[in-house]
Image (cartoon, rainbow, N blue to C red):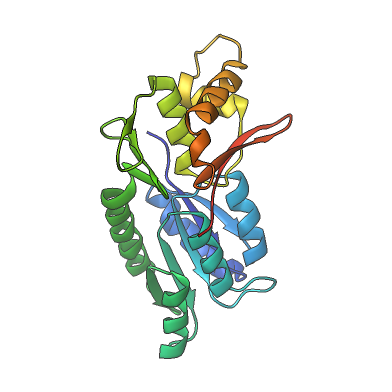
Length: 227
């Protein structure tokens, strides 16, 4: 089973060390960022399952980072702050955070909140991926637009689901081969290109909902339209 990846964005190295220790001990892989701008770059290159972000950070603060994450990813977010004012909490929730933890905090309490959020998101959205009109049901292996079901070959379905699970995240051909066809696949990696071409043809009428973009010489990513 793949290790769940946690984004930790905080400009305080002591906080990062404490949270990293607790979360790593519980089986999470922790990816760190010192500010919001660095966190955005981390998310562009690595799939993230849950984010813990500080409010007061240079370059891009936690509120703007939370807004960015909510616009591009469907993951749980916990905000950390030294402020306990109702107005700050209100702004955090308006930007899309799921929970709010005030510093100083007990590491075990943060862990409980992470686990609770993670379980809730898994139940609600892990098997269902939505890209506006298009819904991908991983449990029942179905793709539909609300009126009809698309009958996709299994590898096309798995490829679409893998890309859609992490919108905006760039996957190399080698990564997609490993994730969809398996590490022991010995065929031509251009099979990814063939399957991408077929998916584009199937969903040519849904470019207002999402696009599969080619990053020349690297691989592919899905970009979901903003509405």
